Structures are given as structure tokens and as C-alpha cells.
Image (cartoon, rainbow, N blue to C red; front, side, top):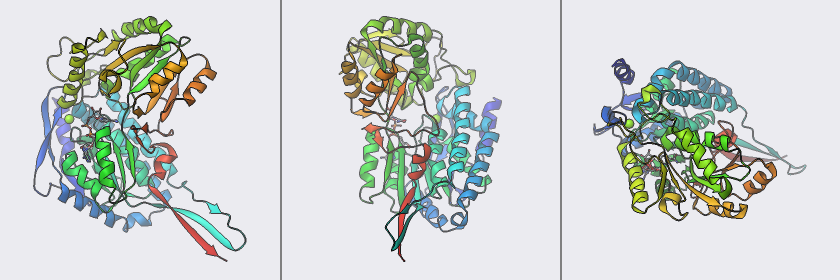
Length: 487
Ligand code: NAI
Ligand code: MG
């Protein structure tokens, strides 16, 4: 297949580690394989970084802080990131092709993700010279002001659902702030990060400013978050790993930004536009095969529209295509065998406990290979059942009903997670009043995936700490220095 050949060509001389501007093997020469989840075949071997490699990367990133990178003005840094964005656009076919193969993303979605990476770089590039300090009025005898300085070496640990998108979300603002970077992609999806590393070199980023260590969580991620030279950690992934990282960061008092997913409710009131809500649910629940931290995985439906909602949704879902990523279906395979098994485990549990399956629940016919699963909804699920409380991270949603707004708020808030809540109602006052009572980092009204590069995102409660994107996303990588002068 020409596709395979171009993938291989794109990977030369990778897939090795990028440390201090050089592509090198892991210190002990170890590698691991990355798998194409559509064909269940090996794509290629990738360097398996461990503590020694992480240490080299952190030291290189630390040295780079006092090199040519430091002498660039914020404006010049921004220009360099703009150049990098243009290179990402230039190589969009290659990058989208790698993403598609590595995690089974539908072709169009993969392309959209890469376009998002370029635009994320541009947003942060444009902000690089606009992060201003303040003057503080201490009275006639003093001048007091703040300067915002780069925090130093930053660590970025990234999941596999939007491999390059998640990397760019934190790497771009860290670079805009003048920091240096050690990036550890997920072991399931290391390829686009490596291709991105080559583009960083081509864009002229000095050696050591961006370092990339591929490998496993315990072998490469853990030493990275414990490394004494790291001054900021940004992590997206599971709650359990987020807790481990927070604990590992504690001895060094290293600040963390954690984005840990959720079990996000879509509340549909009696007066909602059902057509809009169900159309939104297609992407909200089944886009990226449901492997999205902000997916809609709990439908909280007013009893009066329960049937109308589920009937309309079932009719629309019947039109969705599940299939090979290169055919640009609505749903490709799940990203890995591990994730597939995890989701199947939840489906088995639902069956065992006699949950009512509205549709889906199995591998679609005609797809014998690859980690494919049909869009699935269980109805009338007990809010305490694990399918209603745990993040499944697959194309699976559960529905329950409510009778009044207080009950809807209780159902939404009762879990330990609080990433995103969505509300559908034609009564905007009611929406705003309800929205204020929801314990979530984002509340979306009459739409899903509202936001983008400019709007901060992050979770409450166990869904995380801190915010990414927008200007708050850059402030994560700046420290405030106060300078006081007696005159
Ligand atoms: P994970 O959270 O364990 O892995 C994410 C990243 O963290 C990977 O790069 C991994 O190598 C790294 N990592 C793992 N353990 C580490 C440690 N002790 N120290 C430092 N880095 C470490 O997630 P996993 O196992 O891939 O997926 C399990 C579940 O997590 C999914 O089923 C889903 O529910 C959730 N998840 C949520 C995501 C989100 O967007 N919030 C993204 C990916 C997974
Ligand atoms: Mg893979």
C-alpha cells in the first residue's frame, strides 16, 4: 500500500528519541512496537525510553534555557511558532496519516486534529508577546512591578486519544512562554510526536528546546515527573494516573496541571430542542469512538421527553457508519486492544446486571478484524451502576430520567468527576440558573464541544487541577516575579 510506504518514509530516521537536537536510541537500545488498531498489525518499533534517557532529556532542556532560546524576544519566539504552524499545515497529509494509522482515527477527523494543532500553535504564538505583568501602587516611596518569567523545564505527558492535539495544547503555550519541553507521548500513539519533533527542528527551534522521550508510563513518565529539573508538569489521562503523578510531584513541590476526564452529563429538559440535542449527541457521545474526555456519556432526560429523545437518537445513530479509518467513517476502531477490552468489559457487566440495551452493544457485522464497536446506549440505568458512574471511554452512553430541576442537578453533581456538563432547554434563564449549580469546569448550553483554543478548559473535583487553553493556558508556564524599588 502506498499509504504504508509513505508512513515508513516519513518515519526515517525515526522513530528514535529526540534529545538535545539529536535523534538517538534509548540508552539500553530497547524498543517497543506501536500497533495499528484497524488491522491489529505492528506499524513499527519505537525507542523505549527509561530513566536514563529522561535524565538526559531534562538536562538538555535545562541547558537550553540559557542558550539562544533565552535571547529571543517574545515576538521572535512567536514568529518561530508561526513558522512551525505553517510546517504542520504543509505536512498535514503525513501527520494525519500517521495519526490515522496509530490510533485508528477516521481520515477527516485526523486531518481536523492536525489543523487544530497548527491553529493552537498560532493562537499561542500570537500571545507570546502579550503576556504582561502589572505595576503595583505602593505609594510615593516605591516602584513595584511584576515580571512574568518562563518557569523553566516543563514536562508534558500525553494520552492517545488526540495524540498530537493534546501535545500541542500544552507544548505550544509552554514554548510561547519561553520554557523548554520534555514531551512523553502515550505508548499507544508515539508517531506524530516524533514527526512533530522533526518540524520543530526545521522551524529553527534551538537544540534542547523540545525533547521527546517515547516509552511507557512507569518507565519514562514516572522518572520525568520526579526529575528535579522539571518545574511544571502537565498531564492528560486517567484519574488513577493523575493521582500517581500528583503524589510523585509532591516531594519536589512541582506544580501540576491535570486533566483527568469525566462522566459528563447531557441534561435534556422538557422544553429542549430534541432534534438539536440528538444531533449533537452523535458527535458528543460517539465522535472519536467516544474516546474523548469531554464526551457526553450520561443522558439525564426529563421524563416527558425520554422516549422522543431516545427514538430520535436511535434513528440518527442508525445512519452512522463504523469502518476502516481510511474510508472516513463516523467511527473508526478503538485505539488499542487494551481500551477495546476495557469497553467490552463494561458491556459484559451491563449484560450480566440486566441493563436495558437500547441499541449497539457489539462489534458491527462485517468487521472481523480491528477494535470496532457499534455506538451503544443503555436506557433507564440505575445512577449507582458502574456504567453510570465510571468513565468508559468508548462509544457507550447511559440514559436515566428526572422529574424536576433539583433532581437533574443532583444526578449531574453526584459523581466524583466534574469536567463538562451540557444543558438543553429553550429557557435561557433556567439554563443559566441551572448552570450555576453545576459543579463542572465547563457548562455548555444548547451545544456540545463549545469552546476551542481561546476558551479555558479543565475539571472540578476528581476531573483535575488547573486549566488549559486560552491565556490561562500560557500562564501555567509563567511565574510571577515581584520587583520592588525604594525611590
Ligand atoms: P493513563 O492515564 O495511564 O495514560 C496516559 C499517559 O500517562 C500515557 O502517556 C502513559 O504512558 C502515562 N503514564 C501512565 N502511568 C504513568 C505514571 N505512573 N507516571 C507518569 N506517566 C504515566 O491512561 P490509559 O491507561 O492509557 O487509559 C486508561 C483510561 O484513562 C481510559 O480508559 C480513559 O478512561 C482514561 N483516559 C482519559 C483521557 C482523557 O482525555 N482525560 C485520555 C486517555 C485515557
Ligand atoms: Mg498505535
